[in-house]
Length: 375
Image (cartoon, one colour):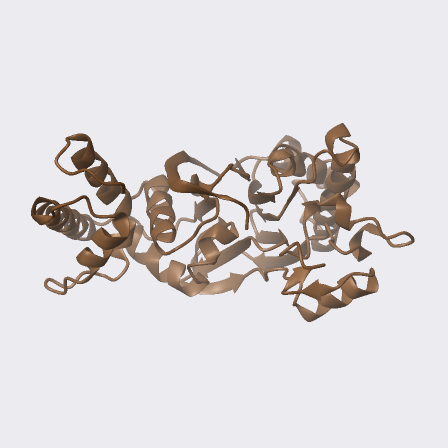
């Protein structure tokens, strides 16, 4: 874990879009970290013959932002530039093994291309990045994961698939690390790096006589292909470990079933998830991409009305607490106070989802000079 700020940077980047029968929303936030090293990519229509294919990805950088930024701009280009993708004919069913090879070769090509960048070749920049992406075709979903970011597919309200985090303690990962002359100490590669696959990180890719996928750190993605189900497929979530460290796949699935019935703006839903994770203890950068299929939950008047009423109740309770306080409470104290109420019973996650608005209320109260203390 790198150095942390004294207070989190809670400004968020948001993006929404649609195409090919999909809707998507993105949110990212620096949080407690000194710098923002996450990046992402969302393209609803691929170039050339692949206009009915879509691509989404999240990249979690470490030791700098160069590699994650380059991944966001170059990974898809490297994939579609492979011989396998050049042979794709939109009038014919694509060969699944060839598409898988194309994705894999694209990852390896990008890793080799990045190695040639002067900053990385000289060792001046030592950054690396995880990568998790999804390629959605009319009939299939291709998941590709390299590192400990994660993608989750939700069908009919339940987690149907989740990528496997590449950690050094995983038996197959540990075996490769040891075969390359390394060791796993305190669950890290050589006691340092917490992931066992990534792009960049060239200080861990120097074993002579071994191929790129046999090094201490491998750039090879783990690829899973699923048939699309246009009746049951609801949501794909891609997020960095800043989300997954404090929220399980199943918990996020349950949360989305509720929050997406309160708002059709997927960026709002993403923001709430990030706010929740921040106050559940995540100290990392946070990025999340939601991809919604037609059967996904949509906003309903009943849920929106209930949510608005509960939000007003929460904010009023926060205001009442401020008026009675002799000094400015911290966010932690305020959230604990609001969670203690049981009548009317609040969903356990809702106060955290509203934490962004609660923080703004505290900031406004402090600016008005009614209390004097740090948040």
